[in-house]
Image 1 (spheres, one colour):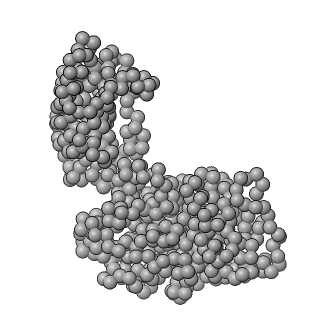
Image 2 (image 1 turned 90 degrees about the horizontal axis):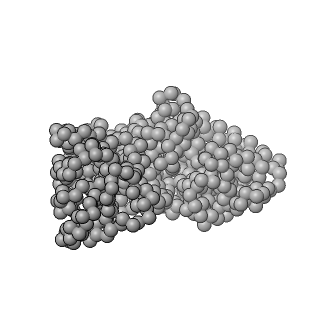
Image 3 (image 1 turned 60 degrees about the horizontal axis):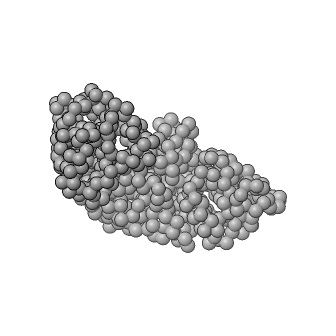
Length: 540
């Protein structure tokens, strides 16, 4: 591709007659496979060539999660594969089954991540050329991972659909073999080896297996194998609420194309599932559960606490689905298997994941409240919250009558405690709004509370640090006292040993010395920021 700035080196020779014939034979074979009896998949899976590159991943107990949920939770650790994802199974099984003449010019795929790495590794082991078409928006960590495996990266388009269309064009132009990420029997069979391993590894009776769904290759392979050998095991698919292509297709009775998909769980963000994977899911999947972003983030934290490993959002889907299943079906004492399908997460997403995990676990609530603008009302509001941990506190003086607060509050009693706290605040006379389920508030507003306040004439700005513990914020306010009006307040619990507060205090000029003497008596490390340019630009 001239002028593309990619690793692609130009066009190859035209398609030979022999190659055209092989393509026709392959197409007929694929059509045959797509019509084959599901029983034939058992043999296809048993003979799958995956272990030249893939490991028999561990099936390990999530001790902490099992104890908390009163069920036996087992995790199939596909995040520990050489490319940190199950995708190399299907990719290698497909490429290994092609003869030398078919792959003479190489293979090609379109992918923004895990499938790309699987194809690149499989092609490297086979000793054939691999062209990987990726959207230009693909994070650099994934691009470099593919290049490190010897893949020739072509960056094209802003989204997967653009990359896919371009890959199919190059497939024809350069006489390459397209490796589909999910809708191919050989790929499905490669992923199905996970189901075979689960049945071999489990030393107890399994009640259900929870499988993430993107295009359907993973669940199609697992379900087709497991249900034909152990029909008593329940197969439960898990999709993000904003990318539920398989659920919508099952409901419609045929594959449907979503107009929009969410990209948080990018490993399963597909607009349309495969025809063959749809057929297999329709026959062998018992139930499909959808989960939201907060539930996925909470599951990622659960997995970390048991394994000290961080999975990608798609890798947390199965645990999120299992937790929702347990709550909705009120089951206990069961053995539930979850597939941790991948760990290719960008480091810069971890802050977002950690921030949303507490809300997803019902261990944090977000609320907005209105308080009277008079000395002591801010402290009284904090007294009503009590000695609960505070994760965030935003406040800015607006006018002489009232002010608004945005707060994050730690909970130990889940939804019931959340409702009780709202009622306590209302009984204390504070108008309050629960924002825990408000997506705009969680994504944007919590970071935008503030601004300048022309009504404040003598504001001085200070940073404080104090030892972090439950009730520490209330203790800090007690120490500050009520002699001066607090005009700005921002606090976030970053999970560290020290809490950090930014506070504005309205101090008449004749009380400056008194304030400074009081701050020295507090014993808290503090720094004045009244001359900070960021304060001048955004807050003063």
